[in-house]
Length: 223
Image (cartoon, rainbow, N blue to C red; front, side, top):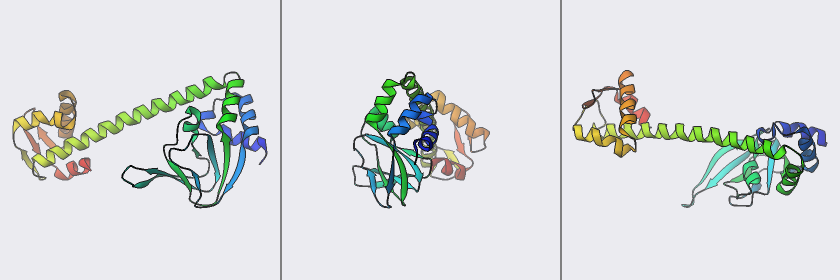
């Protein structure tokens, strides 16, 4: 694969999309082509972040091992997907393992070569930093949205528990006041959530008394 083809593929990587042209040309010169058979471990969890890989052909699984011995496939990657670029850029250990699910053609770039080019080409380091900042910003938004979703699941589970998992009045005003603390929410946020569920016809709620109207909807929210 000639450097010009690699250069075009590197441009498709979000982390590199605003890199100066000179930096991409230099990075392409350092990239190498790898043919990896199915079932090979590209790198293990906690290995050094010493390179990143662009999948040109084939598929690979991202695996995460937990302290209890469980191993979970977090994602399956295919052509044009990139793996290992963040740990490479920040020089941190791998957060998961990558195993090829089929015969793969990969484009690899070593961290030493990447850092040398980024240091040498004007504007390259700033471009990478900006892209990393954008990625962290969007990840932060996703974490917040996920936290809100979890809070809704916790509140729905608490209501189902108090209501005996059926439609009807939730007994005990004091329990409703405790609900926010049990779900890890402040009172205003809980009140807004409950009133939104009133609007959707899931519950009746007047600030004190709560009545479950649609138990199936609550079960769905609770997961």
